[in-house]
Length: 241
Ligand SMILES: NC(=O)c1ccc[n+]([C@@H]2O[C@H](COP(=O)([O-])OP(=O)(O)OC[C@H]3O[C@@H](n4cnc5c(N)ncnc54)[C@H](OP(=O)(O)O)[C@@H]3O)[C@@H](O)[C@H]2O)c1
Image (cartoon, rainbow, N blue to C red; front, side):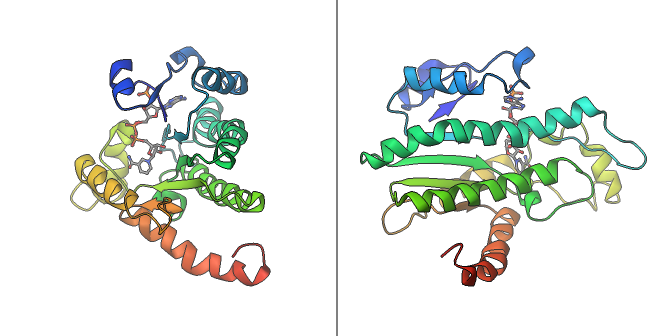
């Protein structure tokens, strides 16, 4: 498993058997040009790496007609939330597949959002990037099936609205748009989310593999709606089981 800034402590990572990766500095945060080299570097340092969790995300609030966002911020949001996860997944995929084919269980986790399933008006870029992650995880899983490999999981983590720093810069505005804090949808406390995430994570299949989606609250409902609706419609096409 790779983390960045895990309490800034390589020692904790070592104790938890988590690969320590010192993520590029702020100046390089939105560059994607070197992701293949970075991934190769990680795999050179950690050749037995069996699980990768791609979780970084940012969220901007803007109004398309009255207060549009500047191009740089839109590009950064799309890069962080969608382009980088797609590239990183692609660069890790051959390694994780090869390891799985040689008998080690491997996993790639991608964080989407309930807002990928239920778009809201406040986040014109965030919602489509998260819908993109949800779609990408499904496509990657379908292509994994083509390989016949059963030891690898593509897991989509689907959180609901959780009380973190993600929306700190615009929570007041989005609460106001919902009629004020009393009326606004309230976030799930982080501790509750973590407990419920691990409960959902531990609901593994008969072969101990993770579920396709680890959703909590509205996130779980979004994935359920997709599975019960769209997937059912796709089944007869023969594209998916
Ligand atoms: N909170 C929610 O309501 C909610 C709901 C659904 C989905 N999610 C998703 O859950 C994930 C985690 O979000 P969070 O709620 O924990 O928010 P958070 O507290 O703001 O954490 C976001 C994380 O992403 C990292 N990050 C942002 N831009 C990056 C970049 N360009 N390169 C590398 N790392 C970057 C941040 O790193 P630094 O600490 O270095 O800035 C931070 O660790 C995100 O994908 C988010 O979209 C959150």
